[in-house]
Amino acid sequence: MEFKNSETLKNLTRAFAAECQDGAKYQYMADMATQQKLKDLSTILKGLATNEMAHGKVFYDYINTQCPGGVEMVDIKATYPMVYGDLVKMLEAKGENEQRQADKIYPEFAKVAKKEGFDDIAEKLLQIAKIEQNHAEVLKKLHTILKNGSMYAQDVLVKWKCMNCGHEGSQKKAWKKCPICGFDQGFVKIHLTAEE
Ligand SMILES: [Fe+2]
Ligand SMILES: [Fe+2]
Image (tube, rainbow, N blue to C red; front, side, top):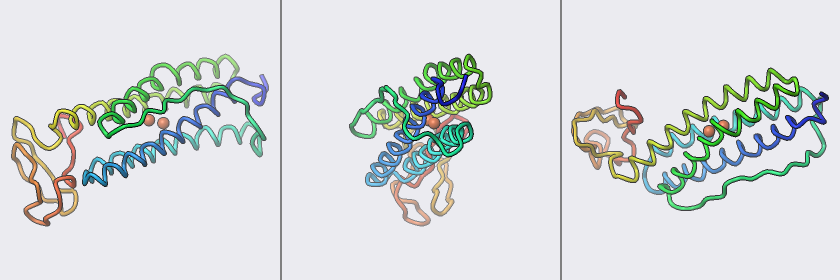
């Protein structure tokens, strides 16, 4: 199968568009978090944006490798979520979106790529699907703790760390202002897993 006539070219174009949109949306969400003084949440979201732009580049570069100079126009039909709302709602929607990419969209694209003889990109798609699975878990966790108010307040002693000055302290609730540098609570590192 010639790449320029393949469904894989269309799928990679769809995936590239999705990754760019995800990257942009995480940037917007990072800005929302900054405005709400949730600095560490903003940092996490910026990290996700960086990941998505990197995924987009993998797809973009693959197209260029297969068709040196790229393709003038790729005609695709595609659907993308356009949910808009506050951070709680956006985190939920993005988590669902990542989950769809991880267990439906990219495995399906990988299957088509394999069938068309593009084994290397099929493998990349499956590896990126695993990263999207991690993203889904991070977003679901962030959604839960922001929604139920446990991001900086728990029922047990927690070791909190100020990401500005490095101060650490064990208490149930994170300080409103860091006792060392005076920076806001939003600079305190968010616990994404129990062990952290
Ligand atoms: Fe991605
Ligand atoms: Fe992702």
